Length: 192
Image (cartoon, rainbow, N blue to C red; front, top):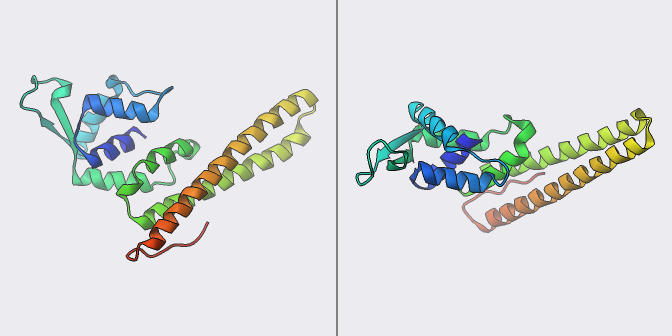
């Protein structure tokens, strides 16, 4: 997830480490944060992998973290594209990851946007179906009425949240389809 956030920032412009931490934490927060102690080793690894490069700033003190400006390489652009279109990793955290992907939708092709929207529609539908099936099973498996009622109330609430998530992504997908339909250069995909 952090790699996607960093690369999506660098797809837009060079950033120094301080700004990467600030913008990443603005996206992640308020409860989760990436520390400088976690970020700089990740940036170093990404640099060794050839995904980013460091350009020292001539007016900054040497060997200071803020004196380094990070830019994305061609390999980094390819990795960004791969991460953005990855729909199989971290399926348990995909709701959160999808929101990070939304920030960068303008950086991929229109048809790729629809693929992501369609996948997330399916993801939401599968989650809702799973919750509904579990609620049906749970009604028969738990003997304690108060406990069963409490568990089912929570599960109904979670299902309602996923129904809202599904409505939201369908609305975004419909906007994208309409945008593509109004653009004569882009073919229109139908589905989901």
